[in-house]
Image 1 (cartoon, rainbow, N blue to C red):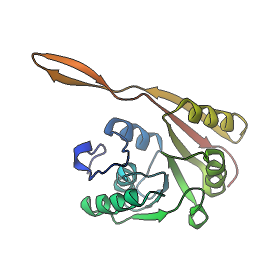
Image 2: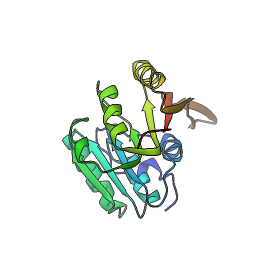
Image 3: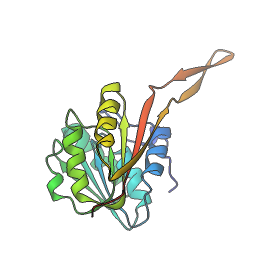
Length: 193
């Protein structure tokens, strides 16, 4: 299955879901290989976890989510898309992260107010050359992320801001309907393990 499952294909509830265009960029920035081991923190509906698991067909994805509705949606979506290399960890990160194996990539979609602690825990598990991709919706999250990474000489990072506009038919016209802008920060571990 190619990268970029249409949004309407996912089973959804009231849990926020990362939109298709952002999922494609996030998974691409994570540099996932067929045998990669990935952690998705704040997995929500599991849309990124599913896309990552499809790309890492011989690897494993660990989806960490605290919301019971999100946990059920991840399981239902995994079943719907025939994804069996995905393990759900019901926890409020950084809880539950101690059971993770060494990681090739980590994706953070939600961190509550625990971003620095979560990054510390991921760093302990991330292999040299591994990637962390953080999707930041708020200015506070991007600020915390950049502040953390500036202090780390063993990481390089880049940040992009993405604004997706979809055309919507309004009578005889096509008008842009904007999705919220998002920052995608990609961090690469240069040293350590």
